Image (cartoon, rainbow, N blue to C red; front, side):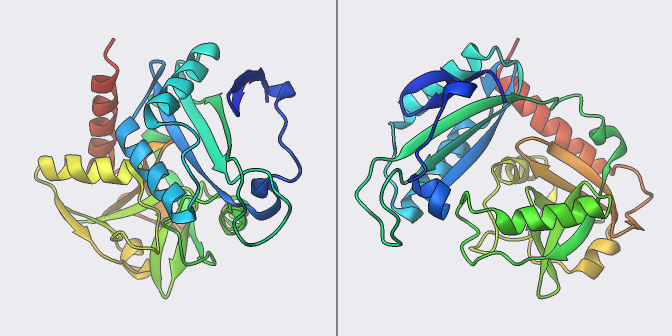
Length: 283
């Protein structure tokens, strides 16, 4: 934990950034967050990021701490101050500091952001694929809000890690909802299948971009629930998130998917997203 962070209007050394113990994010998980990929020193998918952050803030009735234009300026300055070429930016807005009470107080939002380095483009997991395991989905009913309350996801991710898997795919009523920190997809023949948007899943930014590009390519998309049994029998599977972009899934619960190698759609969608990112930030 080093580098420069942004906190409430100031850029500070990470060791100097402090938040009150009365912040509602700390006491009540009363806040939202976002993670943005950074490639070639630039934020990717900015428009979709702003739209989802606005949706989450509105759902919790937390006012924007800054205008959208200023918000992007702050995050870009953070990238510059940390000389971040590739990785990501985490940003979080809470309702702010107030005496502990369940009802919303009149308070100024707390806004923070920090940068981190991560290999996104040349990720070796994209070459070999990853394993996932299914875990019970025990989350609340407003999963469309990108809330900082992530204990259920942490428990599920730890279950996956203990099983030797990269990710956990959460299951509710026999169907996969999504990953603990990713969107889940399977492929049957020439069709990509992923769960439709609702309050049951987060509206993934990568999901939105990938489905739009797939349709432009003429790929058939089915947005519908799919069962664990369907996932086991899929021709291929993959996941997407801000810090993985797209990763092939080669096994689920120890069962080999397809021929056990990254499938054509996983590889194709990953390359489409990387091409989109490079078009946003040309050399």
